[in-house]
Image (cartoon, rainbow, N blue to C red):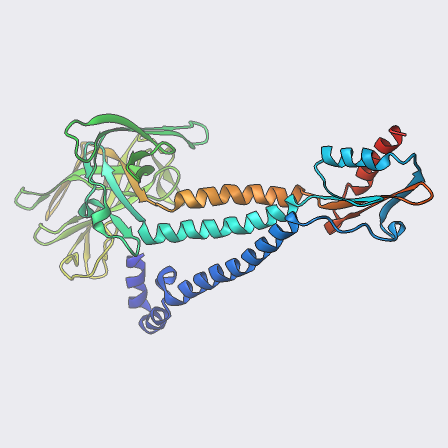
Length: 440
């Protein structure tokens, strides 16, 4: 927030200089943050890749040999057999997707590598997400622009209110599309005041095309221009005012966007008239559905403009527009100005003061367009999906081993081992033994 940073330098200049030395106002582009990010990346790769290779070798290796003393293992059972148990056990293991190791008088079986596979997939997916974030920060762009109903937005740098690029791209990467806002409709719940639907009807002209098309823009239905997407992010109101000077000449005329402050779209804004002599500024509030509160004064009780009203105080003096210091379009620094009036207007009304007059003509809605080009979002999406799948596999996968041996006296011994203490081994061995006994 450049305005807030500038104000911080004014309020606490010494502390602000120290914060700037440590990149406190631009953390995500600072060298120390980049170093943490890169080291995390390297550490994650250095941890996961060796584990992946070891796991791949373990998956291809044969299960371990049958222990000499199965009675010491978990869920040990023994019974007198017929000698056909090994063949029946091998068929059961194959059906249950166990990997088996057949010996002369015993079988070692193992399954459940999905647990470790899911664990590794989860961490490998984090690397893919980091790659996606890196690609987006290097080659992406993000911009925002407020467009009034009836106005056009052209995809050039000067049309954006805010615009930022990745480290390896510049304004040459912008898509030169044109969007004209024909209409905007907002629906609200009459009981809760919560928004139900936002719909913007726009006329779109694509790069290289002469003919335009009418399209509908919604919150979750963006417009697409190549790799660039345009989202409907927010909305508000722009009062249309006419300000005249003391001679009756028009000093300012047109819509002025106001910034919403709450869910009922009570909005603040500033009407700056630098061409008036002396310069005039209006510190204003726009209330879509006006009401009076004993504690807060003028408030809005519904976000739709059912009873709109413009409240303002008039200030005379230097607006500071020629100082070269950037300032917010929604606020006026009145510390060196003099207040000369205070009033409110409904649409069509005029207020006169010694230095001129202001007429509240009407109002129009505005929409905030968020323009995003993020080439790394596909990698991040696939990484997120893979991470969820890997996490599920890690949580619900159960790795276990089962052994069966026929001793020289014809006794069948069965035992198992649950890796990581996973439950369910006892029940599985019970099913295995039941299957063997049926074959007797």
